[in-house]
Length: 347
Ligand code: NAD
Ligand code: TYD
Image (cartoon, rainbow, N blue to C red; front, side):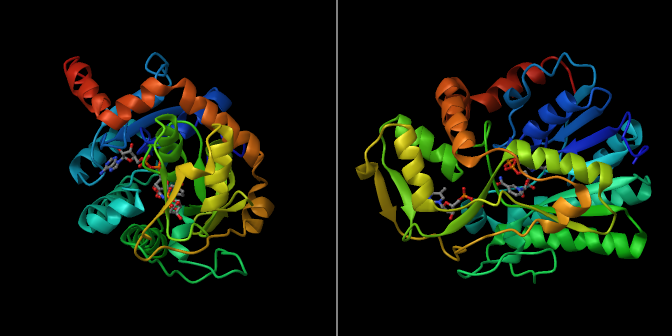
């Protein structure tokens, strides 16, 4: 990347209107005064320009509405913008939705990635970063952790589509020399997460005095990382990551779903009777745990946000931003886009 300090980097960020993408854009424009970001997002149900409110007036930032599966449009955008790197967050991301509509996941997550890789190849983009997930490794028993060399054993349609995308990045590197890098991160939490994922889903339910549905026996384990720690790691990958490599990113913070639920109940002053057990998710992975030694060693980055503190702040954020999640839950924000954004005649 442009010098070892990464001066004046221009990014095309695909999927920057979702949870992690929007937090990353805010983070990177805050941390790097001379970086520029072009956010390319289709604005599906999960994409929301309210996540980026305030950046419209920042001349280092631009939004373009486009589908990563639309090859001519993506090529036109990348050939006009001439970025130093493409960072791909765009995806269908919810495991439960992938169980009911797998075809959509294959279209966006696999074909969309192929379109971006092909564009990077044709237009000789200097870096391509694929934001992937620990779910590609499948499920662990009580012992061990996923390292970058662990076998890929996805169990849900979502995880299988993300795995396919990772393998495309590898193939485009080996065959065509596209300088692709894959990051595999564990479960993120923080502000602006769509309230279908467990933490914001439960916070918003509890706020409405509704019971929260814990799948199965609630003993499934996830490794939670604050989204800002993920953003810092992606910045390090853009600056110091090596093409052809995979980097694991984790929080070093394993929790059962029951523990998460109890922490949320306590933070919101609700009794344990608000927790109800419901039938398990099919193919539900038992445990994820990340070995991030390579990322720490080679990129010099590690998580910083203590979990209890990050979770408390996240609960506070949802309580203080009720208008945001109410609009998201009602689908209002989609109408908002159609009404004013397209009327303004923007792209
Ligand atoms: P999200 O669902 O909140 O956001 C996805 C974004 O992609 C939305 O803005 C959506 O509009 C956009 N998008 C979807 N289809 C598109 C298309 N065809 N063209 C252009 N844009 C499209 O997801 P997230 O939680 O922010 O996850 C972002 C990325 O990080 C995903 O690739 C996901 O697999 C990965 N990841 C997520 C987690 C997590 O805990 N959330 C953990 C590890 C990795
Ligand atoms: P989720 O937030 O959907 O993320 P992922 O499946 O990508 O890890 O789920 C996190 C964990 O919480 C997972 O073990 C499933 C569980 N879960 C529930 O128990 N109840 C729920 O309503 C949801 C959405 C998830």
